[in-house]
Image 1 (cartoon, rainbow, N blue to C red):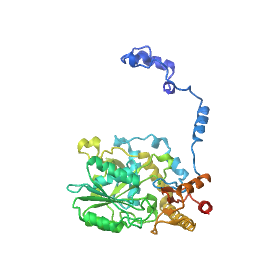
Image 2: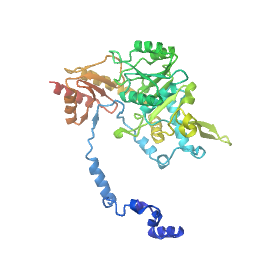
Image 3: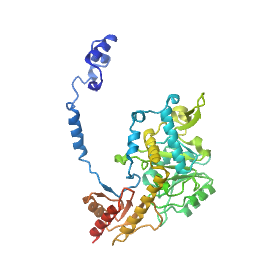
Image 4: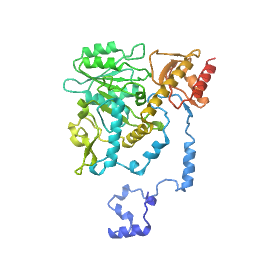
Length: 441
């Protein structure tokens, strides 16, 4: 990296003279000679800027990208307005770091505060943290928040995303906490009768995780679930797709105690899997249990609006072994992106986005279900994902791949989970149906 340091040879010699040595090699005199490489690294020669650009373009050309995507399952292709990237790529945002000296970090603290405010409005909750690493981590951290004296047992719906369930189980394994998975009914939704029976027989039940829309795209009855969970004196954690909240009631309004989810749909590209962010929000009674940072608004000694780190005492770098969470950072730039995305769309734009996702998904479900050999597996209401049976999932997806279409996620040999967003045009959906019909003939 030496050649990238903007110092001339004369600059380097002047610095070496100040510290009393003749060459940079003398800086390593205390390192035993036997562990020194004593030869040049086996690296290619440097290239010009144009050469590097050409090489990178060539390498990128080996990636297969799809102009049309009908797959979701936790990562969704949405249109991102140009203003979002324009604003968030400003140097002052890109280079900002965790505000360990909050009094001189007013800009980043304000961006976190604005993000928290938007998440609270979206989820119907009272307080939000500055984000955590991803949606699965948010779910696991939320279940940890439910634990209290004498109540430590965790329950999870089998209709949640498999990777979220796995993450919750991993966290709880580390704490020595049992996790019970409540099965799904034949309708693809949580079996509330079995949930009620399980919670009623367990005085140590701490919390239940319900995802809606669930992994199969179906809308769960969050309000009914809240009644059951609260009847057992446990807490309800609602996992949500944030885009769906432009159309459906917020988890807070439906009785959830904590709301979590993956923030990738809020202005972040699919980007081969990250970085993403996990959002977390809770009712006031649980605010002090929220992991990570919470930025707050106050006034300075001159009465001007100012921002501070309100709470972070739960973190391991503050309380060490007494901490209730090991999260001590946040996805600040991703959170900023989510806030800018929501601000650019506005309330009406966000509602229109959700409406388009839903209406196009309904149209696609009808078109696919009309094809011989295809039909919806579940009849319930859904947002923008749904499951269909098919003659052969592998054959179907290969046929779509030949036409430059990434099909849905195969759940089994004869089942596919489809996803439709505002990025899918009517022409895309009609073309998808035409290919499936031709393949089924």
